[in-house]
Image (cartoon, rainbow, N blue to C red):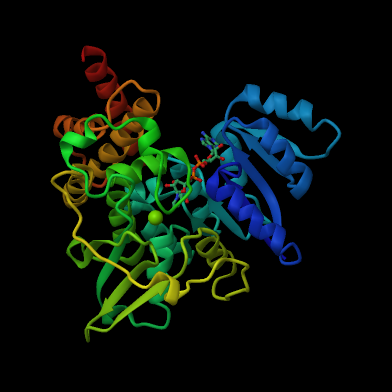
Length: 384
Ligand code: NAD
Ligand code: MG
């Protein structure tokens, strides 16, 4: 039995992880679950999967959950302390980080310190603290198994290869719902328009990130850390059908890619059972039906979020944190209809210009850069 814990169990990745546990209940066991505020969903998950520990973000939500589960023996905790309690559980084999945003940094680091394998979906953590997490994982001999579909594809394509044979990472992107549009058209795009992703059904934040191409920018940084490459070795390729989930090019020009239908359950399951593959009941690629796959260059002049991500990554230090924090806040403002679509990238740019970069920031400095960015945006948006 592999014992797993899931941070963000009620979300898109979290619930799909639990579907896999349901299919493989003889091999996977849920030890702990954490979620933000959805107590009803958490109660359902506790009744089905019997974790020892369940964590809600707020104390009130935890209280409510306690009442809902008064007849059960599950322990209930809350807040960052609760997340950290999960991260260091002795019996845990794998921690699935399926939480959104930088809140994942501290629990991820705590779990690595304890030598726990990480199945990482929470890309914001690597983007902002990759320089801390990757060396620590190496030191502790911990595997960081990617759950993000592109990174899983790269990881799968690298199996059996020697590191020095890798020449390039080919990171594919669907292009999102606004592919082919120009800036004038983007100006009036609504939350509802931006939430209509053509190929993937995901949480709201990452779906907006896909519309701005900020998601691809975060993934470039995520790939740089996971696979220890230079930025110049990562090429973003728009591939609207999302069949090739990403690829690697080797020194002899040979390319190995991973293909499949767009379904996150495959990368999640691959991470949970790595290095094994297990049967999965999912739609298969039918090349007769598909008939063609197409490719384009990303339009970074229109989707400046991607260009800014490359800039932030090149600058390094605390700049990726500012890029990420500005995006997290701007997306939340956009989802609450306080700003317009194009303002997301504008706020990221303004925040980066305003910030004085700190080299090799520690966790406290990362969190300080996050707070500073939030405060800056609060002022800018109030004045607007
Ligand atoms: P989501 O919004 O659907 O779910 C987020 C989960 O985190 C929920 O369970 C929520 O309750 C929980 N959560 C939020 N704030 C919390 C807090 N403060 N404390 C505890 N729990 C909290 O998000 P998602 O789409 O599942 O994405 C999760 C992560 O995975 C993100 O980093 C995203 O970029 C990444 N990712 C998602 C997909 C996808 O298909 N959804 C694909 C690749 C990568
Ligand atoms: Mg992805």
